Length: 165
Length: 349
Image (cartoon, rainbow over all chains, first blue to last red; front, side):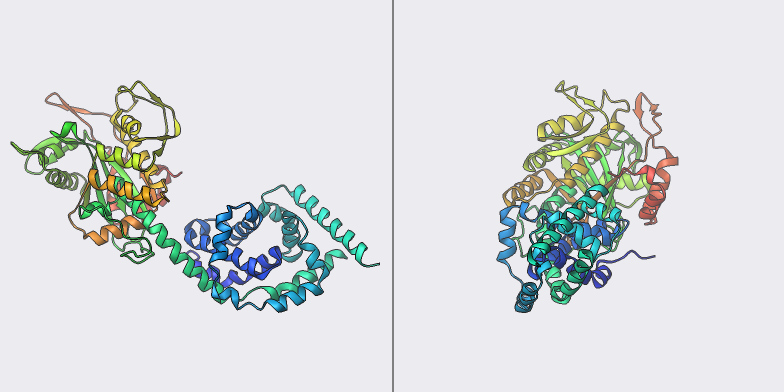
């Protein structure tokens, strides 16, 4: 059996990774940066990635870590990321996104959650992964996953009670 | 119920995902850019890889010029070469510049279309027949070849005779030789800001009195050289010294050079202390392999640890049961498969 190539992987998974990143960041531009940065590293280190048991999960974990670390990275890298906008980034329709976001209360509340909690919610309610797998991706214990999710849900419920009389 | 709303919210926002085709192109462009940067870094690694394992681009022409960053003279992603390559790396101790013998004889073999260089060391005290000269130690071959009456030693001739002797002994063709003077090795190590070496066992130094503990440590040129010279207080003497040499090569390959100033210094150091000669390969070919290598795996061919003494000179012999299959696999270009089938012979990190 020939090993999976980067091209085959990207054909199948790039769209999934983009959608996953959008759920994490809540913003198409950030999501695009996140996926681009990660996939560049994936391609450069492809032989290492493909040796993982499940390359798809490995890459998802890379994206998640990148997202969780984002603000912690060196300022220089953030500046550089902004300094070289790709043409692709400019063609994304922003106004449409904005309109949707305004309309959607839950979506805007999600933005206020701590990142790890949001990631846990996305993995369970968007990706439909079992808690054990979520724990693996987030690099924490299963118990931690459950408590982050329940805390996040509690926050969202509280918001909802406040806004909806 | 909040769970259901969450699911719906996520699904509704899928449309926010940017199209993947332009992103894919952007990723590929970024990869090319970064590979190019890595390539210049790779040149340093190659400088060294070569120094140590594969070949040294800048030394080839005797020039230390680095290609300007972003304007490389090779395709950005150097493809793995499509033919197997065997390079003999000869570590020579330059005894005040008067005579040279090879303390370290390392074969670096890169199988066709592979990114891994496999290192096999041959004992310097190995009993060999020099074509046309008779019985000798492998390390002495370099001396016999380089010695010139009334003038300085001819390193290229020493390397050539050693390469011929290796082929006569192992049956392996040698495509190129890399002659590393100890002084060059020291300069390269210092230019890199030290190299991390991982030792299996502690190494006491007879020369400095220092003990290098087992495990990983970062050493500068002077201490590294001291470490690599030690053989007498080790359980298997020169055999263990060769193992340290292979550990050093791995350390070199893993050393990353990001700073361009430092890179230039490494190139400079490498170009003055390391000589490269190709016998069956062109310079661009060698370069391509050198920059394509990103992994180094030492292969242990052992030794029978039963030296023979002939006319009061003691020689090492190989253990044919262990070295034979490796040499055969290299010759038939199936080393990659052989390594998969014999993982115990290869040290993986």
